[in-house]
Length: 63
Image (cartoon, rainbow, N blue to C red):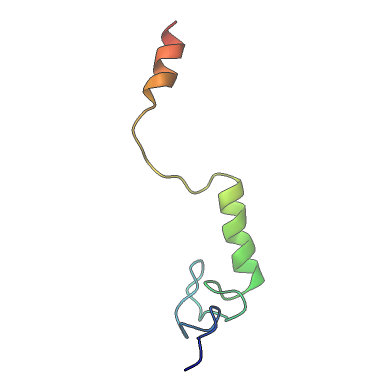
């Protein structure tokens, strides 16, 4: 039995940015453009994870 290639293990799917069919070369995106759009969102802090306020930051501001 051969081990599946990581790039082509899951055929099909939709691009995480535009919804077009995924390219095996740029997975999970359809093209370099969509991969670059996603990278730009990470670099410009377009994506964020909500969380609780940091208590240590609040304490230092009060001093």
